[in-house]
Image 1 (cartoon, one colour):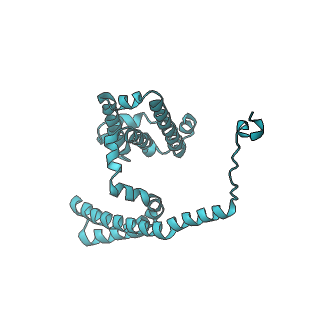
Image 2 (cartoon, one colour):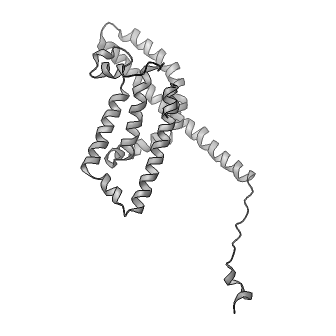
Image 3 (tube, rainbow, N blue to C red):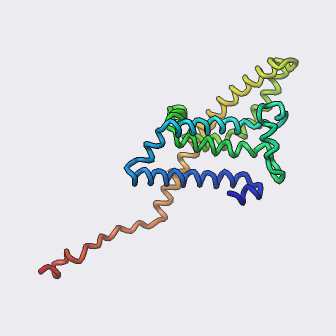
Length: 223
């Protein structure tokens, strides 16, 4: 992870960070099971809960890193000054650390997990891969053209008109993205997974497990 930071390779920072968080979660579960759930009791304490909430708030704050005019945002002038000089995409720097804080705090605090266990959240999780695939296409085709048309129709002479046009475009594009992701999941993603599992079953030879009986069960050895 330190190498990725020095190499300015932010995707690997997130990858290694996710691996570390997953390993930490496994070790915490193992520790809790081996110590009569003492660790789980500690995780329900007020201090630990406050730490998770603080981490979540800090993650949201860092995730909202401004791309420009950061000197007018509270605290961001100092944070921008802390970004290493070798970073070529400084606008992504604090967002990376913010995302790791969000994942850690959410994974370790039940109250925050409730946000992601609702039916809507689980549905979005189901189509998340399809959302990742189709959102760029919809944004670059529908959103930009629709936003220009709305700006021409509503006007751009005031901030209210510009933001209203953007809001209308965002709502329409969001609906279209979710709809296309749902179709892609049903028509492409799920059938592809089923096909891959079917091919795996045809290509892999399953050998029946041979049960080896202990020597003492052999009738010849029984006196």
